[in-house]
Structure formats: C-alpha cells, structure tokens
Image 1 (cartoon, rainbow, N blue to C red):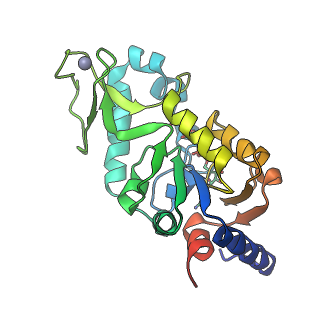
Image 2 (image 1 turned 30 degrees about the horizontal axis):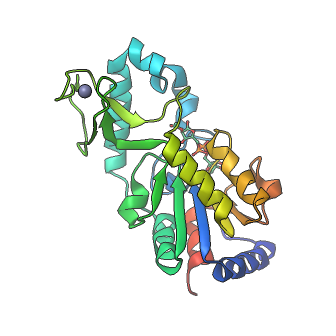
Image 3 (image 1 turned 30 degrees about the vertical axis):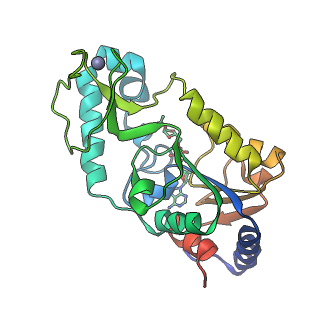
Length: 248
Ligand code: OAD
Ligand code: ZN
C-alpha cells in the first residue's frame, strides 16, 4: 500500500518537521514488528483474540499455571527466533545516528530494536529474552529458543518468570519516569504502530503534545490519538519510516 497523493504532501511536511528537530522521541508498539512476522496483540490475527490474556499475561495466571505460561513464552521465543528487524526498525536506528537528543521508547518485548542497532532504548514492558526471579529479584539474559521447564533460579531456587510486565503490574518506575521526561522534553514525538489502548504508555503521546512537541503518527489505521497528531501517516511502518527518515 503506497501513500496516496494527499499523504505525499503530508509526508513531505512531516519530513521537513523531522529534519528541523534534534530532540526526537519515538514510541513504538507491536505494529512496528508486524512486518517482521511478529503478531500484534489486537486487531486482525492479534494474539489476544485467540488466547486468554488472564491465563497468560497476569501474575495470577502464572501463580495458577506456570507451565502454561512458560509454554506460551516458549512459543513466542520460537517464533521470534525466526524474525529479524524490518526496514522500520532499521530506519529508526539510522535516525538515532543523526539526532543528538534521540530516545526510543518501546512497548515491545521482542528485542528487534536492539538487533537493528538502536542504542538509547527504554523498554517499558520488559524483554522476552530475559528472566526475573520473583524470589530474590535476580534478572538474567536468556537467549535460548526454549527455556526448559521448570526454570529455577540458581541463586534461591524459586521458579523464574519472563521479565515482562503483565496486566495488573506496575511498570519499572525509573523507566517510566525517563520515558515521561523524554516525551515532555522532545521537540518532535513520533509514535509508530501502537493502538494507544494500554496505559501508562498511551499517556505519553498526549503528554508530548501538551508539552509542545510536534506529533507524527504512523499506523495502518486511525487510533484514539490520531486527532491530536500534527501529521498522521497511514500505511505500513516498513514502507513509511524509510520514506520519512531516508535521505532520498
Ligand atoms: P496492539 O496490538 O494493541 O496494536 C498494534 C497497532 O499497530 C494497531 O494500531 C495496528 O493498526 C498497528 N499496525 C499493525 N500493523 C502495522 C504496520 N505494518 N505498520 C504500522 N502499524 C501497524 O499493540 P500495542 O499498542 O503495542 O503489553 O499494545 C500495547 C501492549 O498491549 C503491548 O505492549 C502488550 C499488549 O498486551 C504487554 O505485553 C504488557
Ligand atoms: Zn532467585
């Protein structure tokens, strides 16, 4: 899907706004990884359409049936191992090299931004490739495709869990605070591939707007925040971001 002629002029204006600004904060959601083959959570083919959020993505679900939760995360690890960054992730890694005040906030737990070469990343919802021990708090990188069950903490023997934020849990306060600051202090806020339904992440776009930033949204469809954006670019992130950021 190519941007239509009207979007072409919007795209040009958005390119100019981006070129003028050095303090750029980006917020990404599952949509940026869709073209890498990672399913989104909501909408067509979304994970939460076919699976039960309460069983798989809450602390209560993990307490009730940790094996089921680990089977789900091992399924996701399997799938993610076959995925690689797409042109949208790569364009953001390029953008970071050009901007001194660049911050990338992501809700994604797939690790694809890092793989693409992004450096200054705030992972709001954690990372699938890391485990955390509920007993002693130990965190460990675990890049294995499959985590054998039961995964036990080498330090205290408790069963470790994926180091991701589940429904009903608080985000890391330090990461949230840095994200809020980056949203308030930027001159341009670029929001890509998020349905803007999950808080507190969804509060960052209005916060940036209230603080005076120009807001660019890239999404396949309108979201609750499209109205407050200065430039809404409709289409696949893997096509739009290289056009927005590229030097062409
Ligand atoms: P969602 O699945 O809610 O939304 C994905 C968004 O991406 C939708 O607005 C789609 O229109 C858009 N989209 C899909 N494909 C796209 C493409 N190729 N290019 C551009 N946009 C595209 O995902 P999130 O908003 O990230 O939380 O969901 C937020 C949180 O809810 C996730 O981090 C996850 C989930 O439950 C946790 O796991 C804690
Ligand atoms: Zn432990």
